[in-house]
Length: 247
Image (spheres, rainbow, N blue to C red):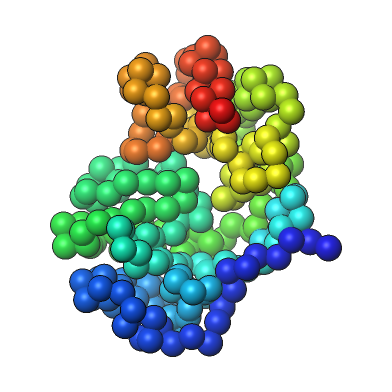
């Protein structure tokens, strides 16, 4: 039986949920709710205990995991306002450069203080994310993901995948966060790769300070390594990065 996503829409009141967070987080949340509602035309719905979502899309991963996710969503957590971008951030470097203080996960934008973020840039990013969720079918297998990688990136993307697979030969290649991930056990994937029209990417960046310094020229944002298509991949750096990520 396929693994089901436990984060599903609930009947919990959004306002009741917002009454449990700080006054500032609730204020920020109401502003984001207004924007996401205007973009999607959908009502705000609680997904699980702490995510506010708008609309939905179905997904099936080749791990057997399937379910639905909101097309737009966020969570007003204590440390950060967490905004979800299911497609990731590889096409958003220009917007991120103008957004203001933030940090990134594979598919999460973390904002500590909404007051210092450029709202017009954030809205544009959310509008783009919503459009992409409508136009792009769910990538339900590794083969489906590879098939949609731009042709000009395929040679470099295949080379990146090969380096990762040779570095961790026991890893299982799966679709995770709508990109390719590598699981070395039954837990979540620890290494991720993606392919784009002008670069290929590896996620996340390891914590080791010395290695992060060596990777500085390839670092974009807080958590992504970008490798251009017109230069050889730095194989040894990638191998060391992957080893640290799965350690």
